[in-house]
Image (cartoon, rainbow, N blue to C red; front, side):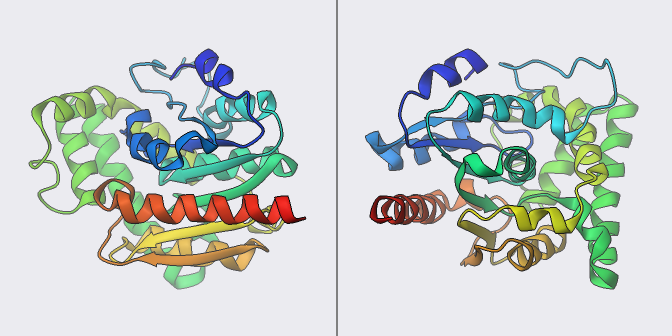
Length: 272
């Protein structure tokens, strides 16, 4: 969905913005839209690097704020507060957008948000997790820099989805991820270089559901467990049997939790 279409969607007072993970697209949230039904207007804006959005301009170093700008624009155009949903990179973008408009957020639902900058403030455990994510970031960037986009995409997918995840994909999906691969190093760098201090997250007072898979990788597991300590109204839930790609592999469980969280927040707002 392009920006204009996303803005036109937001004519109701109860709106949902769902942000996809790196290498994915708006279609990731199709089942969520079906689960939400007609109760909410939903927008799923796509990130730079997607076919609908095009590449980053390259006019300066890319930042998380640059990615979040489209979402902030949709929030500004919405009537009333919005429910913000994000998975992985989309979760990191959602956090940045929420910090720019905290008073406009009705709720947050984040599945293993990739706020990698937080790992730098988490002692030895965080250092171990940071080293792991820096290693996959370097491996992906090295593949891109030498022109092996397919190899970079395969390494990326197998890290997040588990060994064999790349080979299990349809050829058309592999081709799309290969086209997207040059964006991957920008995503990693934006997340790692984000300068938001941990204390800033105390400003996010909207009810927040933080989710992680039972088999979450060490970096996003650490972040998912830390955020509820920083955000005043956040709670953590674990999706049994799921890994980092839970919103896709366990879509029914994840979407049910998202819909339930949004419904509870809406009901509380009506009662209040």
